[in-house]
Amino acid sequence: MCDYGVSTQLHGWLFRPADLNACRKRANQEARKYLAESKDGDKSTIPFYKFASGLSQRIKDGKEDGMDVDAPELTSQGHPYLEPEEEALLVTFYVAKIPSLLGPFAQNAYLRREVKVTATAAALFRRFFLSNSVMLHDPKHILVAAAFMATKVEDCMTQAHHLEEGTKLMNSPVTQAEILKAEYPFLGGINCDLLCFHPYKAVLALTEDLRTFLKTRKGRILATFATGEDRPIIGQDLSPMHNAARALVDDAVVSDIPFLYSPGQIGLAALMVANDQINKPEVPKIDLLGYIEHRFEEQEHETVKGQVIALGEMLKELKEGKYGCGNHKVDLQMLKGVHKKLKKCRNGEKKKKKRKAEPKEGEPESKKAKTA
Image: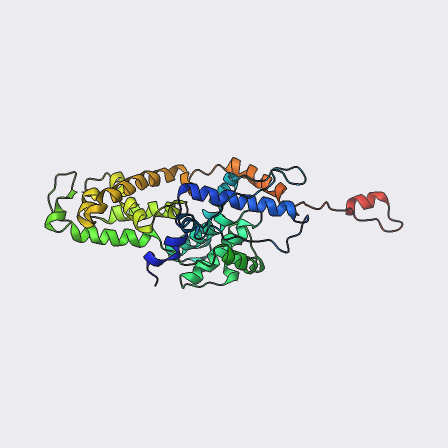
């Protein structure tokens, strides 16, 4: 197993917020440019892009020339293209559907897997749409391709026909042929960077370390009970905090936060938020800032504290649907408008009008009207 310190996730898929916005803007512009230059309805050579992979490192090394692309504002029919923010809303909506397709709560029993598989599918799906646009690539097809690939990456393979059945149960059918066809552009769009690390392991490892440390002489003073009870921490005392932190991570993994912070930072911040939000007398309050001072190098104390406190505030805002978390408060009315706009700006998406059947020789007009 690759170590996180040398992984493509660390060196290729961590961004500053401004860089995330720049990626989405360029993906949008590339799609506009292609749609404007391609022939009406020609879908034979739809391109995929992978510029988001390694962008931060290229910027740091001075090897990134620029992210802006000249692109038109309107289609040839005069319809406006989607804006990057509208594309992000669609991606947010679709990524929140992954747990219904793949994971512990999948509607199709054959697709029930550990939560880390759901998180991997969400991460790969979001990676693709940092370089690519929903105006070129159907997010439904890419979503299922990401789920299919996640089962391979996490060594819990499924079959394409189970995924097809899963999409039918979700009332959003994607055929096996569409799934397999989407795999090639999907892999290219993420630069074949498949390995994903998630905060779930960090939450578990930190909880175990806390449980051990809080039993030591230095650690005991960091845990207090609202009842004033003075006793050492026992096995299940930290379970409520652990479970609440995992619930926060469930929201984080479908948002933009994994593009901004490492799994360890997210896990520690989730524990801190969970610790603050649980108000039960039988559950101990843990001084996690004090824990940081004891378990991290002295020169890192202030940096780690600042990062975790800031990230904790972001995790609290996920319940408001911020940072692309589609698990909460998605504006469905706005989403409906974006879907309509998407249909208009895609080339070759016009519905053909049904032609009335020509009457047979000698057939009366009234019969023609009934059979047409």
